[in-house]
Length: 443
Ligand code: BGC
Image (cartoon, rainbow, N blue to C red; front, side, top):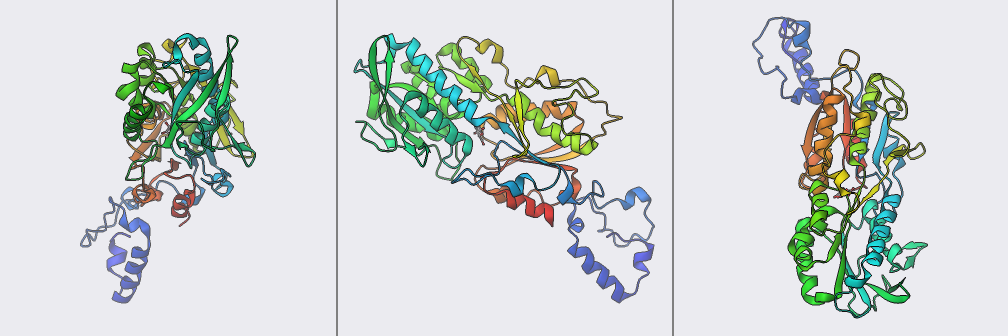
């Protein structure tokens, strides 16, 4: 698509034909394309000739692809989108075990109530009241966490064989049908547990898991429920910390989140109840590692279950691999007042996989990676800094794209020239939207 001697010597008709072909070629839009200089009649050197921006001869549809944090799936039924998960032979998902983490979160809250029963019932009415911040009603991790809390506290109601994860709105008197009053026997006494309120924290522009919305919600809830609120549960730390800072810290109401972001872990010293580490240090590694392995043409287990040439390896207690789902899942750990000192820096690489790869045998490659919402607390304060630590160790030159959390096109618009990259790492706005990306790679 550039001008050279041969090109300018062609007849007018042939030239027009070629120009049209050039326009149909998406490389012609590449920013570093030098075809603007139409008067240059000098034959280009072989290097200069490679001005299309192409990273390799591999077709985009065959390049390694990893989905992370949002698993391609139906947001209503949770059914996995296997077409997206097996887009090509080098496609994987990296996330964490949502059900195991959700159980841990529920158990952590229940244990806290049991251990603090003497002081927890703030108005002494025998009802342990809690409010719940829901991240995204169509996100499988969010759904699992809502179910985990309701299951542990006995407030869940079954619907189609599973605990209903719908928000209750408000439920001051316990008469709602989405949830029920649970009971806990503690020290020979029976307490009622009630989900006083829950809602999806979605802002007016459509962003979910929205921390500011949660901060406002606790204002509304505390003015209607006051000292009926004994515990706060949140699907993540971003929303949990927003509620803690706005209200529960001052009112000494234990607040529980998820993600083990550094600020939330630090807040445990000031009364934040606890959080769950989803082992983001392992997930961020796996996200880039599966790409590295595919680019190196080695077995996908290299540096994962099998030590690589630098000695990097993960043990089975920190992740699982489900071949049918083509998914890697990191395992979760509860972080409470008992152990939070071990989790103070959420951006620190996981030591067993922290050895630098040799660039002579693992040449630098270009990766396109997006974070669906640049202002998501977990992704921006924990996950991305970890990715940035691992990309150096794995010799990957990653271009990070930050989305607005609302529209897929805000991100896909910035995947205009996939040919410039060797591999892709995708974090979708909505788990249903994998085809918006794979269609670009299939063109
Ligand atoms: C995290 C949330 C985050 C969400 C974004 C979840 O895994 O726990 O904090 O907002 O991913 O997709």
